[in-house]
Image 1 (tube, rainbow, N blue to C red):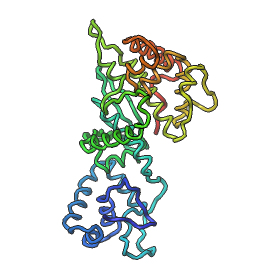
Image 2 (image 1 turned 120 degrees about the horizontal axis):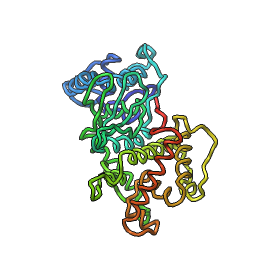
Image 3 (image 1 turned 90 degrees about the vertical axis):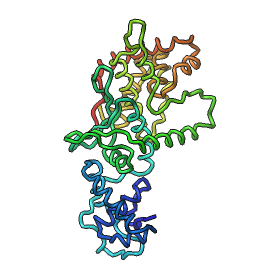
Image 4 (image 1 turned 180 degrees about the vertical axis):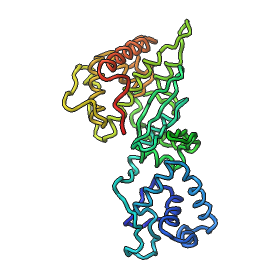
Length: 347
């Protein structure tokens, strides 16, 4: 297939059709030349170019194409001259293109959130980041994740998300291609975990988590087992836990923090980066302590099923969910006392 020059190398997550489109629209390469390089008919290239041109009404798609084009992606064909005359005059590398490793890691996190019932990604004009929100049973929206705008653009370019509502705040849903991609990412992660079957970790589907399963259950009086407030507290801890690992060097022993009831105090937990998120998670787990902290960590953050937690903790059957609810009540109180319902907004 078509490839760009070494001086404007695109990561592999950029679709070939996007490179063809940019080579033609941004850098003036003829459709026939692109067809020869791609080894296909000119009409095929034309259809691909028209498809992306029609998608430029999507703000994520439009901004991503402008960003990639300005960075020289699709700049020239392999047999074209290498002189400066081929360089696009509006080159701007102030915002780097995310690499393949970041896209793969973030895609798994964000697509899982978008696969949850009632979830969508909201992208506001002028904001550097997008948020994933989910509508609760009471009609209130719950923020479940924050994602860099460049990553959201990559997901849109790959057809993994699509805009369902335009305006100052565009809303995106998971597509069929996105669900297929999520399944592949989950299968790949499970294959990496095969050598450790004794862990006893539950395998949850894309659209569920242990906390959401419990939240759907109702008691004899018809009331949900977990209120929206408790669900939101657990979701906030999970958001911080996932953000804490985005730095790529999260070697903290969370179990030790729970057991010893200690927390690190260096740094500012009110920040928006991975280190601040690590401090918030450590403080929350230290506040909960053994027992409550164990079940909250395993269910909310590591997504272990309740039966697995009960077995590993040596608890009686059906007792774990009661301990979890008490832990979430304590966690909610901790969040209310230290910073309100949600972590600091990013972007």
